[in-house]
Each structure stands twice: as structure tokens, then as C-alpha cells.
Length: 407
Figure: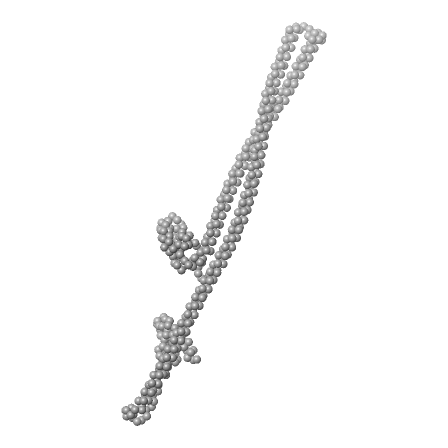
């Protein structure tokens, strides 16, 4: 069974299909010098590449083998084109997967950074809220203190008013007016200083409270902005993920279609190879049948020639025998023959051989290289010889001669 080629020898030699024999030889010489294993000692594929180059040149350099290969070349070229397309698709899918993985890693890192920033901002808001609560407590304390001072000042004023009455006059008897006025003025000044101090502290606390509230609001606004940005980013990521899923699904469907197409083309290629093999086998069978018929015709022609020759020989021998008998009878009738041999009637001699050889009896074997007189083929082992006329014939021709003789 002939081998079916699957390698693109034109691509191996880097030539087109219409290249001439000289172009094929030049390409082989150029590539053999470049790909020789002795010049590529560090390459593990140099020997295989050189063997493939020799195989390509042996196939395309021979005209008959090139004709057979060109008959198979369309299927080989289609197979290699499909394999190249599949490799390109696989490379594209691998590149897309790597890009998707890189994008996923980048998104994960951004998410982690954003979560860390949110934790820090939440901690800042918590600390500032704690400070704001402490300021609010201080404000409440200051307000209570101011309220207490105002109450004390009111009580002091009421006490001064009571000192101006008759009751105050009698209870404050013995005290000078200057002393009383000084004590009142001093007490009022102390109350006013304390009120001023507390109010200043109150104002500072209110400023501090405003600053803290502003910072808390600012942090809240920044956090809300980050949340909105994160929501937009998540939406974009989800959209990108959906698009990636759609692309992945499309790639998987395309890969499935390509696998199905590859399977179909492989089946067609196998079917085509089977057809080519069957055709080659049928052609080989037809060639063997034609050769067998030619041999049969040659043998039949040789047998017919042998029969005609044998018939002519038999007729010639019969004619010779008849002529000899006529001559013998004419000689017997002469007086000279009678005087020489006497008057006594001599007994007629018997014929030693028949007029034609029947090729009967046991034929012995003659060993060595000899040629059959019927089919003209040579035999190295042995051949049969007629015991009567030394005629040489093979076993098949001897059998045919015996069957004709019996008929």
C-alpha cells in the first residue's frame, strides 16, 4: 500500500509549486548547507530538519514521485493552512487570557488600595468625631460654668440691692461705705473676668467645633465621592466582565466551530486518502492483471508457434520419409541392386523412429539456467527435456503439450 504524504515539501524547500527542477536543486543545496547538523551542533532539531529536507528533495527531485505528490498536495496544503489558523487562534486566545488576567490583577490591586484608603478615611472620621464629641462636652461644661457665673452675678446684684434697704443698713452697721463699695466692685470684676474667660473659651471651642464639623463633612463628602467613583468603577468592571464573558463565549464557540471544521476536514482528508489508496490499489491490481494477461498471451503465442513449428517439422519429416521410401523402392528395382544383394528377397527393415516426435514418456530434469522453448522464459533451477528429441520445456508448458497431445 502506498504511503500518503502529509508534509508540505514545497514549504520545506521554500519554493512555490511551479518551481523547475533547477530551482529545486538550487534550493536544496542552499538549505542543506545552512541546515547541516555539523553547522548546528547546539540545535536539538537540526537532524530532523535535515532529514525532512532530504525527504523533500527526494520526492520533488524525482519527476514521477513529484507528479504523485502534486496529486495529493491540495489536501496537504489545506491541512497545513488550517493548522496554522488554529495555532494563530490559540495564540490569540492565550494572549487575551493573559491580558484578562493582568486586568483582573490590576483591578484587584486597585480594589485593595481603595479599601485601604477607605479604612484610613474611616479611622480619620472616627478620630475627628471623637474629638468633636470631646469639644461638645467641653462646650456643655463651659455653658454650665457661664450659667453658674451668671447666676452668681445675679445673686450678688440682689445682695447689693438688699444692702441699700433698711434691713441692710441695720445688718451692715459698723461697716464703712467705702469698704462695702470696694468689695462689691471687686466681686463684680472677678465675676466679669470669669465670664469673659469662659466666653472666650466658649468661642474657641465653638471654632474648634466648626473646624471639626467641617472636616467631618469634608471627609464624608470625599468618602461619598469615592463611593460614587467606586460604584462607577464597579459598573464599568461589571460591564467589562460581561463583555469579556461575551468575547470568551464567542471565542469558545469559534474554537468549537474550528474543532468541528478541523474534524470535518480531517474526515474529508482521510476519505480522500482512502480513495487515493483504493485508486492506487485498483491501478496496481489492473497493472498486475494486464501483466498476467500479457504473460498468458505470450505463452499462448509461444505454444501456437511451437505447435506450428512441430507441425512443419512433422510434415517435413513425413516428406523426407516418403522420399526415402520412394528412393529405396526405386533402388530395389534396379538389376545392380539385385546383383549386389542377390535375388533373395531381403526383409524390409523397420523404421527406428516415427515421422513426428510425440513428446511422450518421462521427461528428466535438466538442472541449471535454461530457457523454455515454448514461453521463452529462463529458469535458474531446472527444466524438463524430452527423452526422444531433447526438446526443452518448463513444467507448465509440458503440461499444456501433454493435454494437446491427448486431445
